[in-house]
Length: 127
Image (cartoon, rainbow, N blue to C red):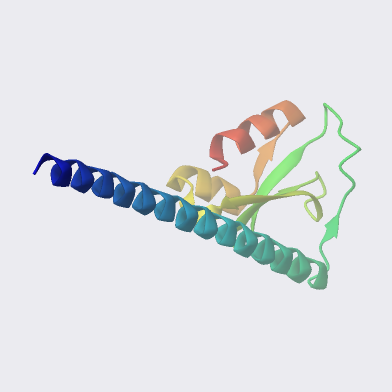
C-alpha cells in the first residue's frame, strides 16, 4: 500500500512540473509575440509619419540649451525640436495613459528646456 502512495506523489509532482513548464513556455511565446506586434506597430507609425511629411532629426545634435516640445502624434507622445515641426524622438508613451493634467499640457505642446529634463520626463512616463 505504501508503494502506491509514493508513486502517486511522484506522478503528481511530475504533472505539476509539466504544468509549470507548459505555463512558462506559453508565457514566453505570448511575450515574444507581443514584442513583435509592438515592433510592427511602431514601424507602421513611423511609416505613416514619413508619409505625412514629418522630418526626423539626427540624434547626434543634442545641446544642453536646446528647447524641446512634447506633443501628441497619432496617440503617442513625440518629442519635437524648438521649431515644432522637426521630430527629435519618437516614444512609445501612449497619450491616453497619461494623467489628465499632463495630457492637456502635451496637447498644447509641453515645453522642456534641457535634455536632462526631457529624459527625466520620458523615464517617468515610459512603461
